[in-house]
Length: 380
Image (cartoon, rainbow, N blue to C red; front, side, top):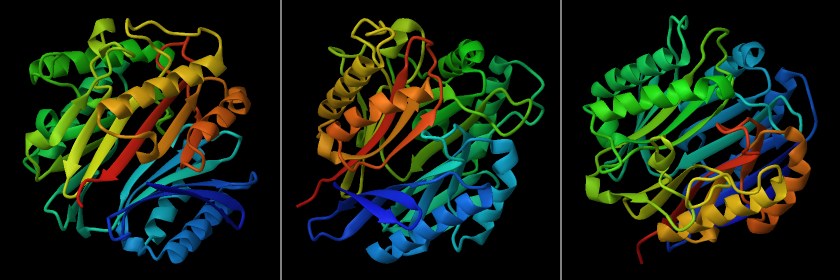
């Protein structure tokens, strides 16, 4: 993986490029962070201009975009401008919108991904299907909320997963066999995470996702939904067109306990071979030990070091190296800790595309959580 930091007008752009053995690009992951605070329309214009410059510089066609994830400081007030942005784009894409204020303080930050082998895109409401030359279909389901949004987090989570199941069924896909990754957001995570965990565990028991089969890689984190009464929202990623032997569930028990030890139901990481590439999705990872205890309570510096140690262990367990990383999302309980955290992460992975946001983690004692992606070419 090649990492590069590019200075574009008004913004900082970090890029990771996965190339084949002939140095032809296969995957481009990038982050764009405006340099200065601006009104929302100007902030979007700055990001749009920086992205266009990036595509031109790297020779990436805009229609190769697979997803854009925007992190907003005020989603209810930004939503209209963000939807207008999508309408201006020449090609459809998975569009994730979450209220997680960027750090340092900006209105927006962007994480994007392009794939070179996309052949067609079709949309059915909140589901986007991207077909590829390898025959694999990438299925993204975006921003699921309970349309009534009048109940508690557990009941809203139950209905959201039922909507996901119904949406995937149109593509002969299921949660248990095809979903690789979920992102679950709660505006009040300290209060509502137990209800989310309960509803997910009960559903997984019904569809035989257990400690003896497998779970799904996930991040459960504080994030605004853009709806005043929605206590939960979810994005999901699934694949169709591969067999189950292509998927590996990654564990590093000497460093991180299995999640079921403390009552939750997600995979630490999931790897998948797709064509000539091997991808890794690392769930939200924090300063935890092999018994499930929070390590370095109250010390964000050492929590960051331990979190990176755990990520390194998951990379190694999946057959990846730190240099195979393609992106980080860094969640901070206290935005002021950015000053202490960023130099540590820069030393670990200099130039890696990384977004920093203010988003408390599911346990109050965790001051930082990081989710990550990685990829490598597996052919000669």
